[in-house]
Length: 134
Image (cartoon, rainbow, N blue to C red; front, side):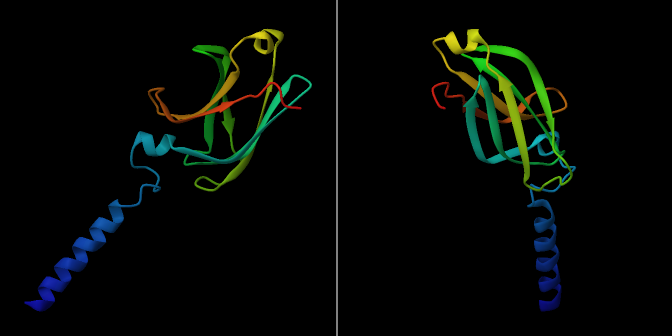
């Protein structure tokens, strides 16, 4: 009887451990769209904002757009990372700052995010662009 209980506990624990890892690919559309960022740094020079950082994604891609207040400026852009799904990869984004962006009272903000198949944004990050840095 004790062997049966030990085997039952071992099988239960093994089954739970298989479901507990959220980084495994193929579970849900949110898992496939997951993106994390770190080591981000923004510089502005000659009316060009440059964001450098590291991203970790399941599907090796994420998206960004530039916003001033509630308005999106320009088109959404896709960033594809080189090799290494589920690994930290360097990326660089450059945004040309227009006169209208510079003169606006509100500062431009980079929105970085993953996207589900239905277009819903996942793990959004908001990075302000300080126009007064040099």
